[in-house]
Length: 461
Ligand code: C2O
Ligand code: CU
Image (tube, rainbow, N blue to C red; front, side, top):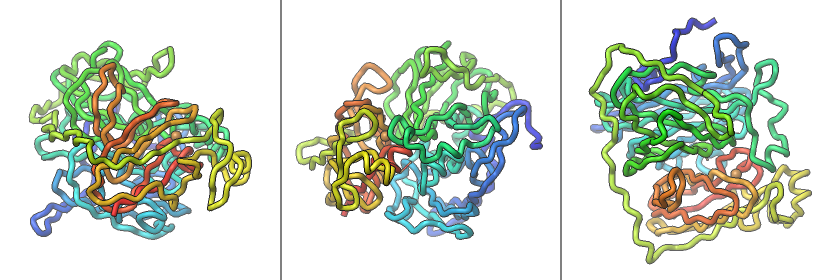
């Protein structure tokens, strides 16, 4: 049995003890980590049987990786699972060769092999990393962790900077991962594989230590396979959003935060003494998922809670290149047939013989389906139409894009993000400057939808 402290200290400061090393080369700091993936039993709560997860460094979530803007991050990844995988650095505008997508940007890391990810960090913010091979299973089993980039680690990430990594687990009566449901066509054709337990930083109903007064930053990450999560602090109905998908934004107010799979939101709480509990509020009955416990332990006030806002302006759209993406398929949809491996097939056959259910522009997507080819430097508008009966959390690798929407508040505003939650029937425009060369995935982050056809590649050259 692991010896545990009474309360979970979830501040970033408490995670930083992680074994990382720093060296310098050519005036750059190189931040080095080692991650090892393997099957590990995990304790979600004190009075429950251990659960059979697949974890990085035996930790759920995986170890917090931190770096400063301008550093080079080097992660030596060793795979001790019984099957191959890769790691993807979600939201990082990465070098294409370090993006971690098998069949697109790197070979699979086989059992027993090590792959070194090494890339420059050019942006601050709240990010995460996760397995990208069979992600619908590998992420569901626990292969992911948080990645936080700041301007200066000494000036931030203190006890006033709190991580809230939320995950939705499907656990059976034996407290084990429900393995039978992996690949279930019912899940794949509907909303995806939903769980029955919600963890916050790898614990069920944790008590989160916070300083008893003064400002706080809360960083939310939804690592669920498919579940859209809504959080509220109930007693506080005006929340200050300061960052979206890692990118600082002009502060705005919201009553609750809605997070599609893979999305992040950072909140600024003016006074931690107002914080009592965290609730998930998707259903009529709010579900209490964590309590905040004030402590008076040496409170540091050195923290810069708000990153300076780098002003990202929506570019003028006059010479933009338009790419239409028609999202189709799924249960109760209107897709009757689609092209799969060069051949037109009926949806029924696609579903039963190939577990394929979703399409872009009439094509079942996969790692070698090219949605479009654009020139480096082009201004792009992806005109995306969710012509299905399900919401989808759409993610573009390698860049952030602007979307003008009413998400998180009733006012329409442009937000710069890497993952956008689309309602059924919604039409949206994703705007970005294609200034990162390479083949980049565009896919639904409801991981079962990606596996069953909702994904393709946008090539920038
Ligand atoms: Cu977060 Cu293609 O992934
Ligand atoms: Cu989807």
